[in-house]
Length: 397
Image (cartoon, rainbow, N blue to C red; front, side, top):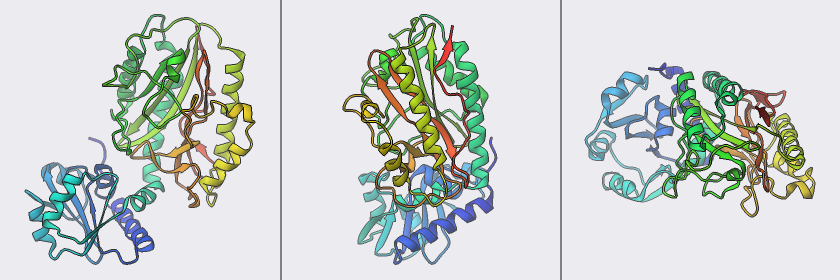
């Protein structure tokens, strides 16, 4: 098993969460953390249970299953068993009037079961507070993400070209990439925070399949296996000479992710229009990364970059047709889609140690989705890439 989250990390995270709650909700009384990712962040384990954080007392992790595993893998100081929320309520004492929960995560039925034993008068959100605390990574977290980034670079830049062969399906490629990533150290899941988002690994597309519409909030497209499982890649679309190959996937170590996209030209070049669009996207990535400095607002980066792009280039930029997304990049860590985003409305200044996946892409009719994506750490000198520097459009014979 991978190493435990150090006790010092857990103490620091809890303290920063409390300070953020004090800042944003000065009268807060009580927080209940149900989400597995936030539980892991604050306790070092993810179990069926709830983390209860009173304002004036120490937090307690109440576990239904598995207490044994929680005790084995966590340095959190107070982990207790429960059969139901009744046990947690008896152990915590009087219920406050207002409880803060993850409103983006907690189903209504679960909340109702909880409120039977914690009969508060009001429920408020803590999603933003938890997200912004998680946004700034420690040296410990960055070291883990750098490991993920090295695996990501080796597989997508060095190994994938050797996997591509005439007649293979998108699904076959996805399976081979997944297998190689796991052998190299990938933790085997690509986790998203957005409700209902399911992803095995990422999006794989040959030719115009990378433009196919999806319900996923990203610029790329993917036909997937079937309407009931629109993931990974098509079993039917096979690789042909002259195809653009689009690979956009996550890689993770110990729960932490990086995100990366590489394109390949299989046995022949793509159109000059596609080549020009691709390398303009690479320039946009580099320009955006150079602005990832402490004190700069994500919304400022977005407006500056978009304002510098030609109207003709903006057509089918960050998507295709009417399916364009309104961001240039996104925070990343325990989930691929973390806050903040490089987009309008994100006006809180960047801090050193935040991490972003920057993904300028552009759909080209008859070719597919060109562009690039890499993961960058915010530093005083601008974004530091941790997933490699290959510009993409890799020729494969």
